[in-house]
Amino acid sequence: MTNHHLSSNALGQNILSFRKAKKYSRETFAELTGVSSRMVYDWENGVSKPSLDRIVVIAVVLEVTLDSMFTVR
Image (cartoon, rainbow, N blue to C red; front, side, top):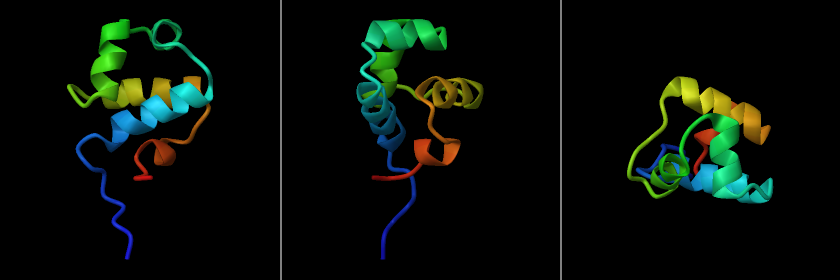
């Protein structure tokens, strides 16, 4: 049985994976989502999590579904 609960940093790992798949640098992705590159670093490394409003922006920029943002891979 697969555990589909979001682990402590699954969201950050998904953001990193999707960002790299789009070939966006951290700086470019930060500009596209309206945050600092440090904030992106913090998300990807589990230091902090984006707000729900920001997650919607991230999904649009990365062209992924909201569901995929929260799916444990």
